[in-house]
Length: 192
View 1: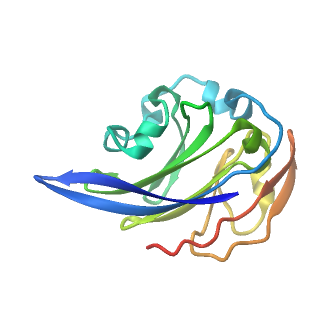
View 2: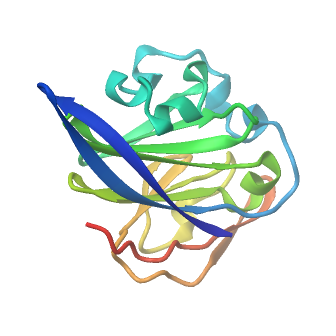
């Protein structure tokens, strides 16, 4: 299921507030239910300093307020984008993307999925704004990310990226340790 969502992030530069707008498109699917820690083993490791969201994202922003601060885990980065996983108050697994590394020039987005949805489809997220655009997919443990094929860059075992401006590819299914996993690309992002 695809859900468009528009979020805003505000940043202060001196005394003036700058409003940054972003477009987020989310994806979730259906499968059997497991606790977040059983689907994403990195959630069970001790949180390190690098696992925390940047202060300018975590302090009172919609994205920062969505997940519990003690549940974030850094997945990796590519270019100006950095990715985290986290768990929200409803126990859903979330993918968080932050593009940019300064309070005055960043966009951030998050998408969450129920545990029952995450196993078979993961979580997809597009974020676009003035600093850039990103299309990322959070995968459960046991999905052979490299087998998803052309068009995906494996950043870590649980994170793959795709070109946010590319036409959506046909859904791709691979067999993982928890059964069949189907990745359906999000529609190309129009915002730049």
